Image: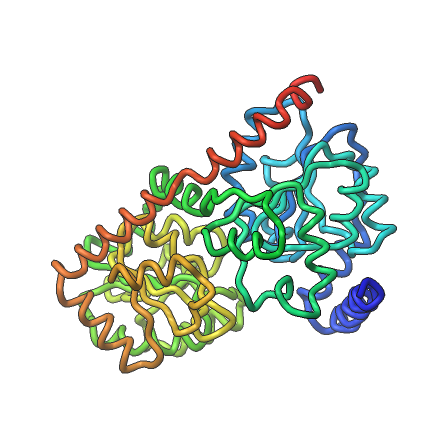
Length: 411
């Protein structure tokens, strides 16, 4: 199985190399790894994230570890350009890199260069050679906010190598009891149910949201519907609402913000009704829709909304619904949400709603936008749900403190 894994890693690299000639994301992935120079450290704390979402998810732990152990350098790695390119200059890390390709040689060289005293991976990302090298060098490896499902490769007949990866982890901090049971069934008992650190992140953000005067001016005390991380299929649905509710304002924050896509979105809406955020100085009184053409604002935008639609449900899966729920508002999303426990929970609590087509969106949004009492009830439930699920960060950091303070404090 290891031979097949190594062949798969090599083939993945070759495919991305070919794709890099005509795909910008693949080009960033290849060139970023080729050009980076890894700095030598004597004792670092290594955090790895798949992408930007996992960075935000693991950030509360990163924040606390930095405060607890200021004498240790923090190294952050990303697998995806969408994480690295946005957070490569984060002040939370002493160095930020692309994770090198998972080969035995790369893992050995990287770990011997940064010399981690521990490694913390968030939610996903299981790389055999990096895990094995950490294990050989007796470096503790923690998985935080982990979540497991029966359909994952770990639990398939052909998943023997991935099950071996699980055995290389020092401790798992998982989101729910079903994840713990799945691991226990495979003989893995080094597990704590800590919950999901995303709740801590979104709750802290809601309490300290950045004020956006331009958005306040656009809203102008009217009710606001926001579509966050929307894809083209989502945008088409949202457009059907705009003409129906002339007394509401709308914000659309697309998942992809390429100039052509943003301009195309503006043109698809009623003439002169939409404006890009970069042009907000030209805001007119009859502007009903604001299109966000930058990255980084969305988590603060939710504070101004009354109803949120979260994109991705007609693609690979919904984006972060907790950012909106933390501000106390009902959320709507497409049908692909089964992998997201918070979505299932909020639907059961009647604070979130899944739709499959335009008719269902019009009906669901209409119930929320026309009935203030119903909307406020949903909002209160959503906010309470997020608050009640905070605390994962403290559980994780307490464990690390108890296990490693004597080593880290002496550095």
